[in-house]
Image 1 (spheres, helix red, strand yellow):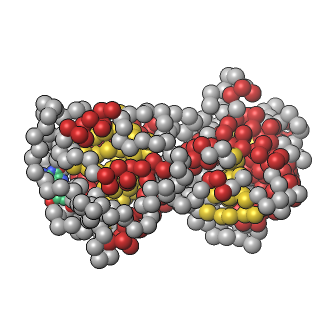
Image 2: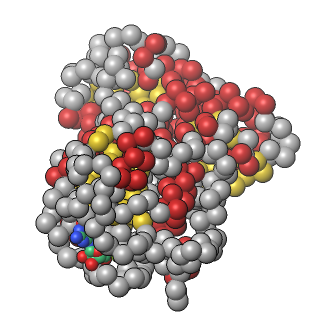
Image 3: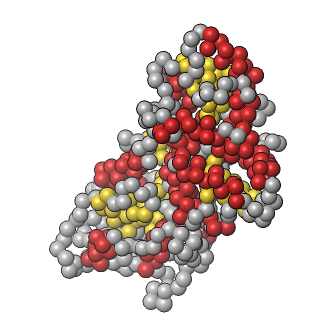
Length: 469
Ligand SMILES: Nc1nc2c(ncn2[C@@H]2O[C@H](COP(=O)(O)OP(=O)(O)O)[C@@H](O)[C@H]2O)c(=O)[nH]1
Ligand SMILES: [Mg+2]
């Protein structure tokens, strides 16, 4: 099955000119895709390639221009590179291991940290001793250090012109001379860092680009990083069904539905049910009560009914109150993000007031409908429910300059096209600023169907102790 680049995790390579970024890009891809040269500014526009990360699957790998490339078109390259960083799921900060840390490298790391991005340090020139100052910083874990959001996004000023360093106006790396380490020469093994927190420094990896040394450690660190987010449910129905169970999927095929196919959450859930050896009835809204009656008569009532969130009220009206019912959007909130955190966010609705700003966050680039869920339905529903004159903003990427504190609430789509790490990053960024974030399906269940607790019950472990989340 082909996988679009927009739905795979994005790894973005950054660092100063001549740090070895393009060399690491080529090393990971195991081919000469971009030009490697000691001449500064060789990489201009970002270059992205689909890479099959061994043991994980497809990812998008991006090489960018050096963030101290100030000459000629340097500043616009610099901005494009920062845009790529803002959209990354993981940043690889490339730095020559044999040279001391540069103030501008620290600026880059502060910027990455302010964006709430997870990153790995990739030290090139592994055949040479690690510079003692760099080693000391890495060993103490103090490179850089404030928690994300401490100064708000973009607090480093990286999005503007680079601040001039009078000693070194271009911010160049020192010439690549061999340093005399004060500590004995040692090449530490790849060091895993904060394993459970998907932000901050995840690992320190050493590579020697000309010989390829460190390639396997780099791949292992990346595999570890991308599989750690999948420690909860990784497929839509995990822990919800037993083989032989019957489920009903309510998939309205209205004018907004794509011609000739099911949308991704419906198709993936259907496939997952088949893989789990379950019986599936897939139908439109008008057939729910009929199908339910037939199943009950046959003695095999549905273990679960999963509906499109927009039809919550219509489906609810056709089922008894004790029939477990949830929606595709809630199921995806569980596998793509932190479900209880989204659930908590819904309580914010009760205190919204006139003039409060609400950010509607999506992830894919779907075509807008007349009655678009993000730009029409959710805003209308929230205004009606809260009776407040709310202001809405819409975003498909959470850009680096977005400040959660500008909003009273964020509402996220189901995230079916997003990587789990990206949704978790967005949730953490808002949670750290004390701003609630909830989900489209929850707003629909709560404000239109009045059945949010019921729709959450099949997905929360406390409501059904034998179920595994
Ligand atoms: N000895 C050595 N040279 C390297 C290493 N990585 C990069 N280089 C050299 O450093 C120069 C700049 O590399 P490049 O990948 O183009 O840097 P970029 O500007 O960060 O993309 C080139 O001459 C590379 O051959 C490394 O690990 N060891
Ligand atoms: Mg380059």
